[in-house]
Each structure stands twice: as C-alpha cells, then as structure tokens.
Image 1: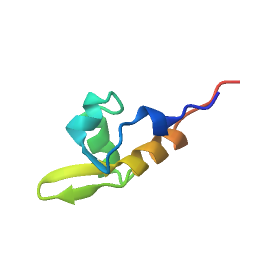
Image 2: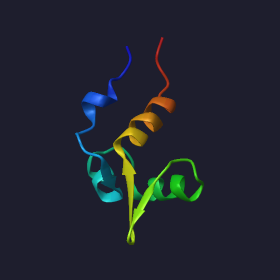
Image 3: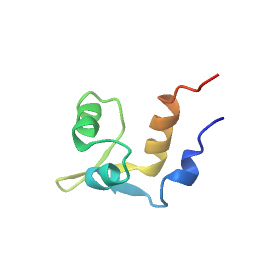
Length: 68
C-alpha cells in the first residue's frame, strides 16, 4: 500500500520549520541538517527558512520504504 502524502499534508505553499515539526514530519534539527547538507530544497524569506509542500511530499516519497 502506497501512502498518499498529498492527503496527509495540509494545503499551503510554504511551511516554516516549526510548522513542519508541528505536523510531525521532521524535527527542526533534522530539517536544518538536511538543509545544511543540501539534501532538501528550501526558500529563505528574511531570516526564516521555509520548505514548499511539493518539496516535502517529494522528500517523503523518495525516503519511504514500502513493505512487501
């Protein structure tokens, strides 16, 4: 069974790191590590870092291991 992240992640264009943590997708520290290592695309608006909904879905799909 494939997880439909499009249904699980709320509608929106950009989410800041705190919002992503509140959705229980990634902890802020892990998101910062992925950003620092250039493993996930981000948008910086002023001093705040945001990740797009499409990027989150793509990241989750790439890193999901399906069961048999």
